[in-house]
Structure formats: structure tokens, C-alpha cells
Length: 320
Image (cartoon, rainbow, N blue to C red):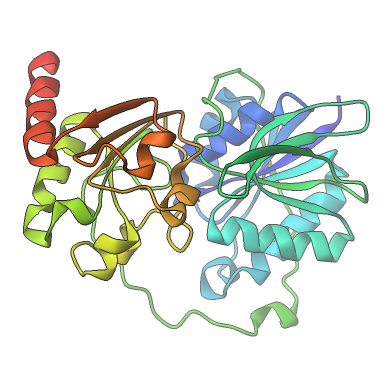
């Protein structure tokens, strides 16, 4: 089978879940070849092999950390030239999409972003996307060059499939033109102990109906009982009730969890654009006419301050 390059999203060798999803999807169209850039390639290779990587091309250079994405594009281009893959898959993170776009320009290929599914055809990989605020699904394929495709987190369940995962060194020459923007400082993000919003399997979000920052612990308590991430609508963020980094919507983050719970959110198109591809949607709102109820799988008409604590208690009881 043809080989498929998979860009590895990791933290010091700890492979993140979206990469395992990419490997699962890559096996539909070929033999996955993982590209690991930075420290921890030895540790990552074992995990990558467990999820189907036939080999792992690894490179570590200070430029990957000292500069913005251009050196990583140099490395991925080197991997592309070494493998001649049938496709290149990357996670639909901000960094992943920028790397994908730069690579597509360099190799003269088309690009598809934010795919939610992937299948093979006689004419090459076909990607499914949710478009127009997730009102429609489209199927697309690249008509020129090698397909470069970014895939949204939670688009596929990671499936283990043992493969060799042979670790090979990737020779990379970082161009001087890739060193135009240098990282001069970093500030570690404070950990909440909750899953990353864009990768979480469950998201609990609060909106205008939460009625104040002092009431968001009600949302957080439900999220913590479920092992979920916490999101917020633009109205809640604009009011200063919750950090902008947790905003879900067209001007915030797009999420596609297995379960999305919206509490006190009306369901404006701006918010729907960021969460409508969630597998199961539950809404809690005291307004029976709220637009959010048009797209939910389950709706509860009621006061969130009565419903959410009761739901939290029930979850805790069932978990023992």
C-alpha cells in the first residue's frame, strides 16, 4: 500500500490523542508513517507503532522550539520528499493548519482543512467536512498534487493496530529563511486539571443564563463529575465571566466531542458554528423557544440552577 505521512502532535514525546485519531484514519488509505519533530522520539515511537505507524521519521533540532512553524515545515517537506506519500495528515490545531498551508504551497498541492471523516476512493482520499455552521456536509478530494488534509479532533475513535513503528532518523536542513521569527519567551499555561477543550470527549458549556462569574462553579462541578472540559459562549466571555480561551463558537474554538452539554446558552448561530458537529448534544434552558433546542438530541426546559446541580449529584451517585 501507499504510505501516508502523519504529523505527530506531542508534548516532549507524550503523543496527544488527535495523533492517534489521525493514525486510525490514515490506515484507511495507506500505511501510516509518523513524523515526530522535537524531543522524545524514542518514547513516542512505541505508542505510534501500537496505533499503526509502520515507521517513525524523527528529527530533533533546536530550531523547532526556537522559531515559529517554518522549521517544522522544512522537516515535513523533507519527509514528504523521502516518502512520496499518498497524502499528508495533520491535526486541525492552529499550528497544524499553518504547517499544512505552508507545506501545500511548497509542494504545489491542494489542501483541505477541518475534515471530520476520511475515506479512500479510486481517485484518492475523500474528506468529509461540515460547512456553513455545520448545516451541510460536503465530500471533497484534492485534484492537484498530494492531498494535504487537516482533521478536527474527535473525528474518529483511536483504534490500536500493532505495527513495526521502526524509528528512523530524518535528515533535516533548516533554511535561513525559516528563521525570520524567533520565540523570545514562553509562559506556561496554568493547568486546570481538566481535558483540553478542543480534544475533550465531553464538554460542558455555560452561557448568558449562568448570570455571572460567581455562578460558573455550577458548570465546573458538572464538568468535573464527568471528567469534561469547560466551555463558554461568547456572551459569557464578553461579560468577563470566563476566560476567552474557553470560548466555543465561530470566533472562539471549534469542538466536536462525543457529548456536548449547553447550559443557559440560547444557541445563536455564532455558538452553533463551534459545536454543531458534536456527536450528542444536550441543552438546558428555561426558554422553551430557544434556538438551541432546534439541534439538540436531548433538551431540558428548566432553570439550570436546579437542573445542573441535580444532574451533577446523579452523576456522582452513579459513579459511586
